[in-house]
Image (cartoon, rainbow, N blue to C red; front, side):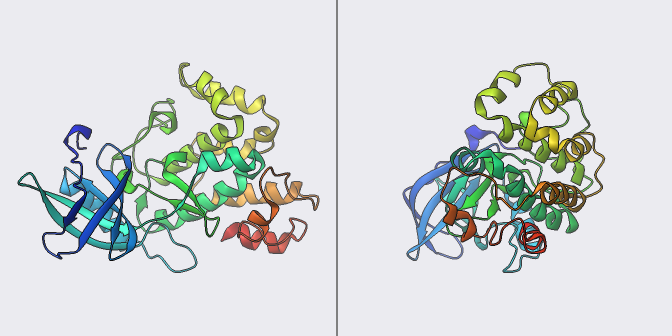
Length: 305
């Protein structure tokens, strides 16, 4: 991986070395281990531009975005617009421009609309991970920071593919809070179960809230700590079987984990949608559900989309 200190800061305006498209930088969106992402204007269109010190790191991400079949109904990552180089202080750096997804980070979204929607949102995450896994890739750095809920479509979007790895290889990038090796629950081999462990950790983290999570993250990290949290939380205990399976690497696929979560969610439904602190129209019109959970066939369809 590239050192964060080697990742350049983009000039306010620049043009690609080969394609000669002009970019105007509006602001920096984020900076990670292998690159920095900026919001930019290109031909009056907002785009996200990622630049890194190591062109090989970016090439892996680009190849993934190119290779994964993304239809209009279910998109795994942002649209890739172009790949090019630019010169900064006489040195050449690689960058790629992609679709800019305007949205709210997953944990911020849950804090705003309520924890009752955690499972619904994570079912959407699992749907996207399943497609990614089927096509030979593991996301690797699954965490709330790398998942947005789109403002327009209210659907989850995976962002920052810096940790994407081919199945069978080592995970290229991870975050300790969601890494199964740190929790003494396995290695860092890139396989679907690695991502599913992180999904289970996200479910725990989002269900107990930021403050409670910060109090436990400084403890010695091993699975019994998580077991105690699950036993002590009514909502998590309801979903204990799929959570424990994911923590222990017992799911063969994201699809399998999703089926179990959907089954529990529908079984507990009494016809009353989860209480919500956000706008009702934001959900029922927005696309997470368009029918009451009482209509199980209809709700199942939208959960699987």
